[in-house]
Image: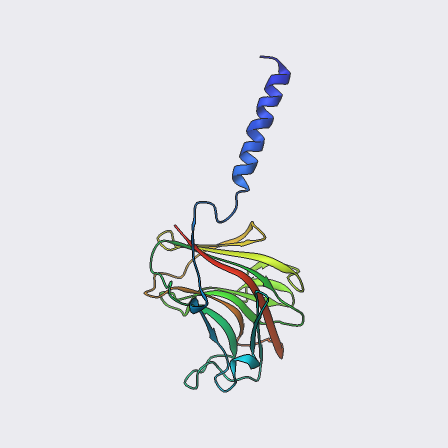
Length: 214
């Protein structure tokens, strides 16, 4: 076997490995069709929906102010305008959220995506924007320079494996253990003010929201 053939063979193997390792996050998943009935918009209870949400040309724009009311008169949570995906709550399996998001300055201290439900908490994962950076809750840094650009977000939750994985623009950026089983997991995106260190105005935009499962 000559050296040229060996190098050519190694190159083919390397390219094949590269393509496999850089596969799309949705590979092996089945797309779940969504209709408008699956998009429940939570917003300050004392305001019309149109005062904090718009849907034009395929883009959902959600915004909120730090002085706004919560989404329910009985809630003591922070203000929010969020999409709550209905009809596909889950307790087992491997589920994936995909959406293209956009966060304009000066939004800060805002949860832009989450998995609601956990064994001993209200959420399994929260992705927040602080000064243009995406963080796991208010801790681990996931990605920088998130302001004023469209990005593709994929969140995979392996319930039996107890893992949550985050991809930005198709690249794995973060993985963590989940927070235990729940009888009601579901995905959300939009803006939900953190308990502290928040901007007065918060906004995110979303398009091409999809769900997948295995």
